[in-house]
Length: 229
Image (cartoon, rainbow, N blue to C red; front, top):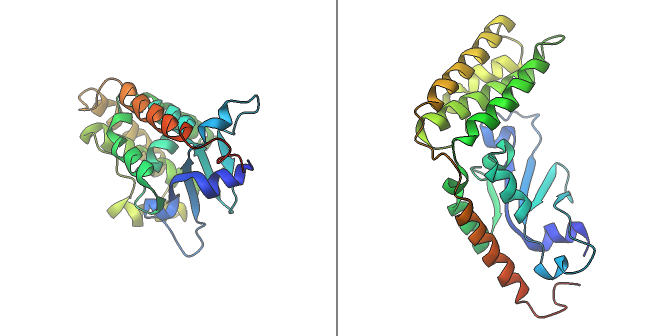
């Protein structure tokens, strides 16, 4: 089966991400699409396995196979977790709706380590060379989202009333020293929030795995040859 056909015919969940989902879109913003597809179980039985992710078929479109997506989300990958919380859902079926009911199962205190490690790497890049305003804006957004997630146990990706300030950072209208100071302050606040977060110590891996197995079994029940067109 062609990789793009997996996306066209077996996507269970697709959404818009990036600036449009974060509430930071301008007239010049691209439309970034992310999705999750379920590779039919019979495709795993031969030597050639289906791909774990697919670029396209549309521009700025990227999709994960369900198992790969779940693995990333269980490890608190920011891209995967935020995908599950996009307010701009473009495509969803019954399996996709069940995936969304598992959003809380993926969340745990691991988000602190994962988000903080990613943020530290991005901050180090920002501190070398000339100011890079757009990456700085997105880092501030991520750190705010991470801090609030650790405080409340809920992930919200829309920046809300921070939009104007963040767009001012993107335009280079905020002094770089102020941007750096805010990044450091948000990192410290996330560290403090992690000490008393309501999040569980570990994600609910068993619950997610039960879902994955049921999806695989349902796919395996399709008559032979029906998924190998």
